[in-house]
Each structure stands twice: as structure tokens, then as C-alpha cells.
Length: 141
Figure 1 (cartoon, rainbow, N blue to C red):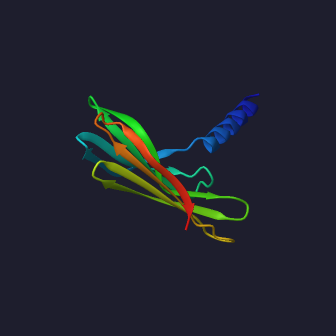
Figure 2: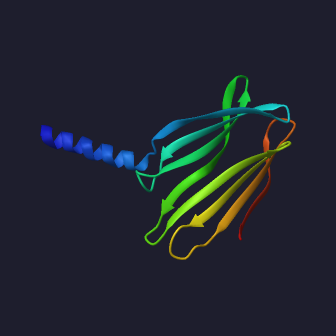
């Protein structure tokens, strides 16, 4: 009975670790003032849900409220994924233009039939410090 119990715990651990992503902090943290409000930009590295060898990179944008961070947006700077025929890599970037935060992602397919694609989201920081989505466009090159 003892061996069966330990084996069950081992299987349970394997199944839980395959569904959850282990998040590890990268050393990149920046605080910026946009339209008079403080925003914290954190970069996190995590194992990809598709491959334990690939690491994704996500940018988390927080607004500081009374000394506490409130999560507003998650934006992948690098994401690795795959299907049975192709490997996909997503490359993201962030730009600050006056009171606007511009998030861009380029989706690329690395083998077989490449299908380049992009997504661009533009947020405006209003007078209350809220992010207002001005534009969310996807398209092909």
C-alpha cells in the first residue's frame, strides 16, 4: 500500500506540474510616469506550456495605487508554441508615446508554410490613470 500511495503522489505531481507554469522573475523592473501616474513594468520568464525546454517572456504592466501594484495587462515579449507540423515564435515589443502604451506582437511560423501575422494594441492612460483601449488590430504583412 505504501508503494502505491507514493506512486499516486508522483503521478499527481507530474500532472499538476504539466498544467501549471513555473514563473521565475527576470531582473527587469522599471517604474515609469505616464500622464502623471506611476506604472510598473515587470518582465517575467516562465517555462512554456508547450515545451519544458523553451522559456516564454511576459511583460506585466501594473499601476501603483496607494503603494500597491494593480495588474492591468499581460503582454508576451517572447512566446514559444508548436503544433504537429510547425514551430511558432511570437515576438512582442512595447512603446511609450506620450500618454499611450503601444503593444505590438509579430507572430511567425518557423518551418513549413510561413504565415506572418501581427497584432497591435494601443492603450491611452486617461486622467484617472486607467488604460483605455483605443485600437486593437490584427493583420497580415
